Length: 499
Ligand SMILES: Cc1cc2nc3c(=O)[nH]c(=O)nc-3n(C[C@H](O)[C@H](O)[C@H](O)COP(=O)(O)OP(=O)(O)OC[C@H]3O[C@@H](n4cnc5c(N)ncnc54)[C@H](O)[C@@H]3O)c2cc1C
Image (cartoon, rainbow, N blue to C red):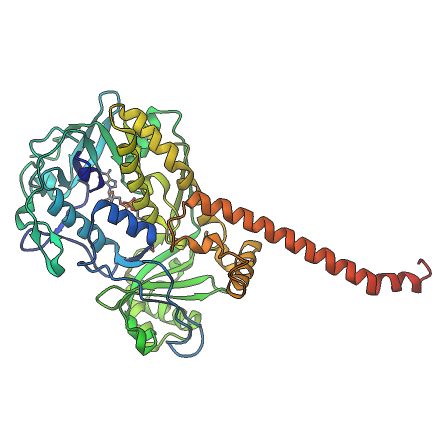
């Protein structure tokens, strides 16, 4: 959307099929295994920059956050309302909403090609090859109907100017939605062997943590190196039940963020609810534990022991879903030496996947995409290689910082349970900030979701705050030691005749 808004002709390739309703509108998957995510201020700002109006879709504002207690009733705990403009979205619903908005606003410039998998990149000739998968391999895939004849190029942009705005239909809530005829069966390669080739001015690799684009670019370009680190935690998803069942009556069940955490077992149940009011949860456990829980009865027993405050009905609802759900790894951290190669760039998880514990992956993906568009606009696209390099120069520090932030403090899930100096500093500084707001600033780390302070600045400030905390701690320890020496040490030495 950001690129189309600037007049680029954009082709978007996705290997999965779209979910389409009777009228041809792209829908999102919201099955029991899909999960909800928290979108922070930076994500909201990026969507605004793109002109994406998601308020008419099922993307409610975050209304309350509650860290539950392990014992007592299901509503035990003190709800809080985090500042800022956070929103809750099902990941699939959000993707569907953005596709709809894009087709509604830029049907003349953007074309979606579903069930097309990236097969090869010819970097010297700026060409990509896609192969049809799924039903597309049988000649039945859907594409969006517009953007002129093919040959242009998970997002290729070319700089030619498009015409005026395409047809705009009005969907629910008065929000522009894709017109019914937006998805057609045109432009579908006829056989599984048919590779469709597209030339590009800029190739945007937004193909996730296991990015093929990244892997291919690394082969071409020795200057592009990436380090991958997998989390030792694993998760499964389930719908725990109506979110309102676990909130005080006045908070309702829509737009809530709820967690239960058992430090001893390193077990976390984290859930978010959208307009359907259901609490969709990820149940995170140390690697290997899920594999030992084979049946619904195993999960029932485990949940009852790990989170005694959960009502029996919720446990009975979640247990069979957990037993059925495949185990997912807790995530991968990707750190690259740069985010560009020739006329290609990496964005989102392809560029900087992080563990989900800090809830920053989609936020960083959207903010990074906005940074790419802003860079192209600012530096121009006459020299696309230079523009791609400039995007990398501007965004890489933040990409690396969000990875570092994820790993420290509350980052790597295992560490979230261990009392460490960083956690101590955050708690002490937050308490002091509440007491003396004019003297002690709010920890930078706690401004991740409420501000658009760059990740790199948050990381830098966090380091400074930790240094100050260590100095104060050292001074306090030294003062205590001196006091102890004065009151006990000297007397002890005198007693043995040494002073
Ligand atoms: C349990 C959980 C909770 C999370 N919670 C949050 C949260 O609260 N807040 C937050 O900000 N983030 C959260 N995240 C992270 C967030 O979901 C990801 O960071 C985000 O989805 C990344 O978006 P992306 O578009 O870069 O990659 P993806 O969402 O992985 O999308 C990549 C797309 O590329 C397609 N693709 C891949 N390879 C090819 C190919 N070869 N050819 C064609 N298409 C291809 C895939 O099908 C996919 O549709 C969470 C993640 C998990 C697992």
